[in-house]
Amino acid sequence: MNTKPFSTFETGSLADWVNHSVELPGLGKIPGKLFLKEHLGLTGCEISINALQPGEVWPVNHTHQENEEIYFFIHGSGQMQVDGETLDVREGSVVRINPSAARVWRNNSTQMLVYLVIQMRAGSLRQYGLGDGVLVPGTVTWPAGKRPDKV
Ligand code: ZN
Image (cartoon, rainbow, N blue to C red; front, side, top):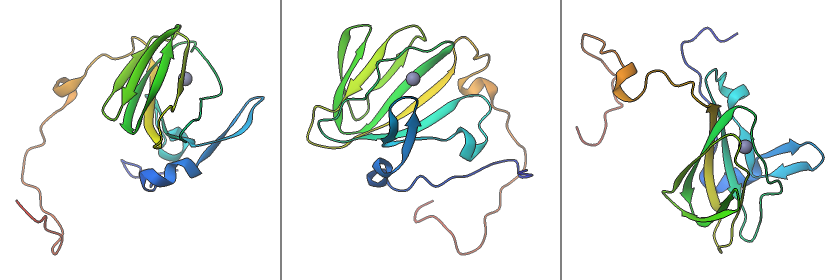
């Protein structure tokens, strides 16, 4: 049991993400996906890190039971299809999808498509943005010898 008030996990560089894999029921080992819930002890959402090779199509068109998903594309370009509507996506694109919508995506480019998928129960968010933060009084000290280049 982790007694610290935080958890950490190293995903490797973006170029290494394609080396992760998951077992999909009926499809076997699928490369380029890793769920972080178990690695980090996540309690409010699931996050996966993903990399899809050039020319590849994600093998399952799927919906969800109760979770909405956010696809955050951080490198490359490709296409998503949501309930039959095709969306072009690229580095910087963010797509939120209702649980009941069917979604699938592909990398129709010549570069690796790298993205995060965040899923959480639709309608569960009660506080957000700066609204959930609380300022901690006092000054912060940092270990010696680890100063940032610029202050
Ligand atoms: Zn999904």
